[in-house]
Length: 146
Image (tube, rainbow, N blue to C red; front, side, top):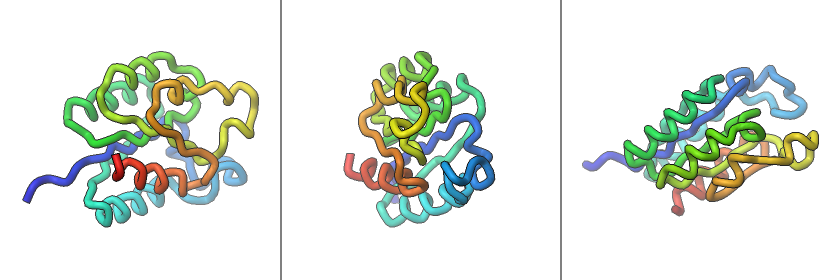
């Protein structure tokens, strides 16, 4: 039996604190809760997810490169605050031939003005934001159709 196509699920800074960090904005689900739901959903879709979180920009870039080298089907990327600041992550997305889907629990356009600019979004193939934890499941459904 061949290995299932892999979708990388990459989460950036402060997402390790989901469930306790500003639950009025981000909800009560932990990142582990979200990852468990994605793993079950991926199995139903004939996929495998590789879920990772880091607080470090360069690590996200390394993982984007790895997704490309390993032949990932897609990447779901919630770059956290780096979404609005990192030209380096933007360039990494542009440099790989793997579709990157931008994911956010909240809707950055409904928040502070500095969150309205998304360097990730400028390079991403698709975007899901403002649906809470369901932003991830919607993005995984989209990845399965790519």
